[in-house]
Amino acid sequence: MRITSKVMLLAVLASLSQYSVAVAPEAQQAVPSLSGMSAAELEKAGDLARAQKNETQAIEYFQAAAHKDRKNPTLYNKLGLAQLRKDDWKSARMNFEKAAKLNPKYAEAVNNIGAVEYLRKNYNGAAKYFKKAVALNETHPTYHVNLGAAWFSQKKMDRAIAEYTRAIELDPDAFRHENRTGIAAQIASPEERAQFSYTLAKAYAKRGDVDSCLQCLKKAKEDGYRNLANVYHDEEFSRLRDNPRLQEVVPPPVTK
Image 1 (tube, rainbow, N blue to C red):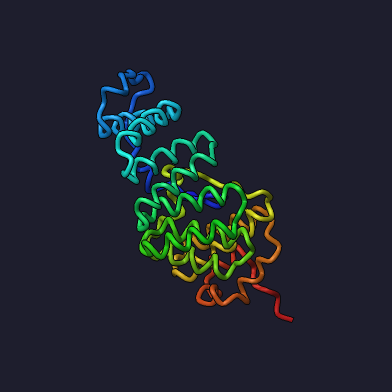
Image 2 (image 1 turned 135 degrees about the vertical axis):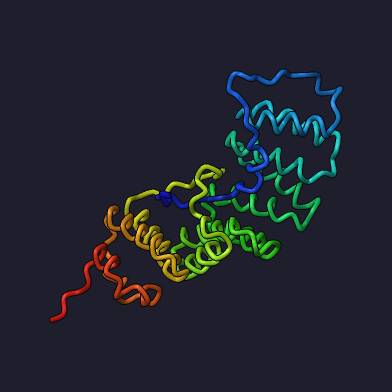
């Protein structure tokens, strides 16, 4: 399974999974009168619109549902997700904040505030919210991936590796959920992509996942990473240095 060459900002992974309803493209949703629907019916209709990738209609449903059930944090979170898909970051953040205010232990909403800050390239601010999400739910790999991405974007590689390693401990496939990913933050340059692949290789090496580690090293090599020889110095790779497969990817230094 291919490991992505992007920093995966799995900011809304948990939320989006609830919208994974199989809907045929030709099965367009009829638009009933919103006023005659209950909050639960409006939420269900919003979920269906979301599954059909009709964010505009989903926003209408979730707004109407939240108007009828003003103390339901899930509705504000879903509304924020639909707005985020429309690139309305300001409104999305406002509704994520409403959700988190209604339920201070709502880790998903806190995480999604961090996602908005990450998209704004406010990586320090994003880290603040991702750390809070981790504190609220330490066993959710998504939040560790996100926090790692925030540290990576600030060049704090040791912290990034620690979070990526924890994410892999919780879910060995944490970096392979591309089909479930809500937001992917592209790395700007091949050099940064190469550095990310090398950083991720360290995390897999610490985990003992040789195949994934070597796959990441190959990707780093393809993207022109200049410091591949560091595998023979960095502690994370110490258990792999005698592995012929590693030596095929990164030839060992010539002994003088």
